[in-house]
Image (tube, rainbow, N blue to C red; front, top):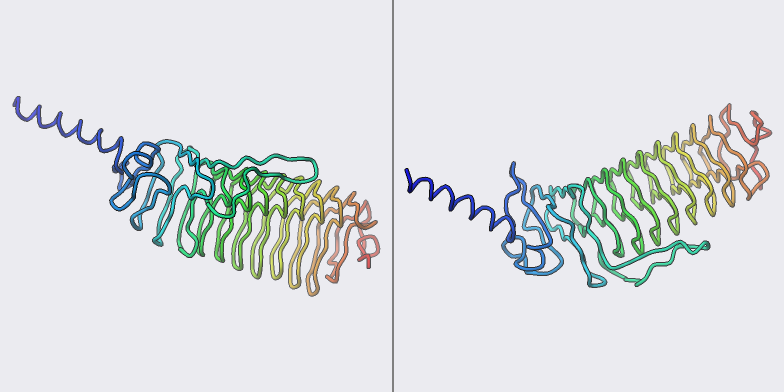
Length: 315
């Protein structure tokens, strides 16, 4: 009996020691990442001490402490394999960049040309959730088929999120980034995101078939929301921006948005597009707030008028 107790105690101590340094299981098949293993030993087989933490393969990973990256231009975590999930677990991945609002734009010091909090460029099917990523060139960088949820991305020198197509970004905050808050390609979805005081567009869909719904864009220095073409834009609020509130290319549907007090046009809508049920008011660039070549679909409310003449396009 005494031998069994000693063996059990050795097992407990061993699991604690491994968990404190070199990449332990965090329970339920999840591997853990923390500052200690990142800096001292490497968190996994093949991961050298120091940043970035290189994930060894597909699976689930979870932070058990915040990660602090002090070297400029360095990634925090590198993902090399599809079907990878990173749970930030309420912690931060923090880099050396600090951004501030100067009143005429966002200034970030130092100004790196590389480095991401989570770097997965060219890798598909990656998920990052539940925490904060700040202080890098890009907060999160993905290939395609990625998911971002419940993440705060701020004070990054370029984009908060930069990704390819088939991306879902939801229930997140992108703020005080030196470029676009979120920048994704075709067939993506941006839902329930607050984009605040970013130096370029709050939210950008680079091309086709992107859904942007129930987002708040406030005080961005570029357009609040910018979609190149073929987007569905519904129930967003674009307020106090430095350019157009909502700007679209052709083939876009714009419905049920509040667009107010932007420095240029409220809605700049492309050809073969339609808009209805929008409230467009107090935008500076054109008297009635709407420019472009789209089709008015009754009703919209533009500067207090609810008819085609009131919401006419201004050349």
